[in-house]
Image 1: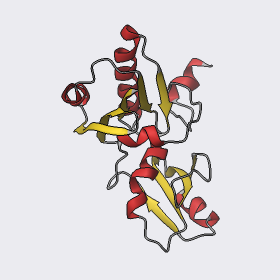
Image 2: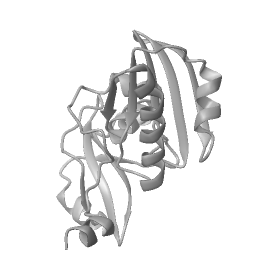
Image 3: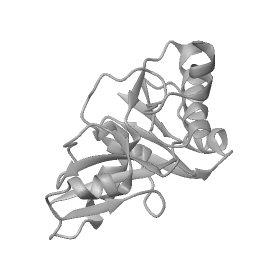
Image 4: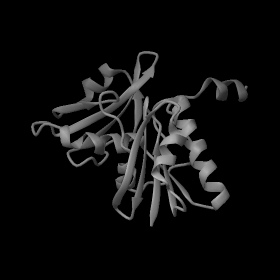
Length: 186
């Protein structure tokens, strides 16, 4: 099975082409380079597209989803949404010092809050992704915790295929109601 994986949830995007579990090629890019990076992979006809849906950059995630849909629809290729935090946790695993029993993957959620999720030593989620203050998160920790964020670590699209299957909707992970949704429901 040929899989094209896309993650644009951070300032550095990543695309990868996999043949089964074997990595064929991987490219990283800055903001506007998604189609150039995909072109370098020469994906041809793929059987599946994986796309990171965040949490992360609002615009970046939407660009990744639009690219995935644009590539998939004309060819009727299935798309599967994957948590970008899960991929970030797997990317960071080799760097976690042995004395840390868990990691907290986090990103700036603005307004003095962070998006966060806890993971064990093998990258398995211990908590769902939530939003809160850093102080709230720190106050609730009972184990030595390694903190991971982008930068300096960026999620690798190649690792999206290793994320445990979870049925996620094909839309950005929003943990806070957007201003648009607030206005449109009133």
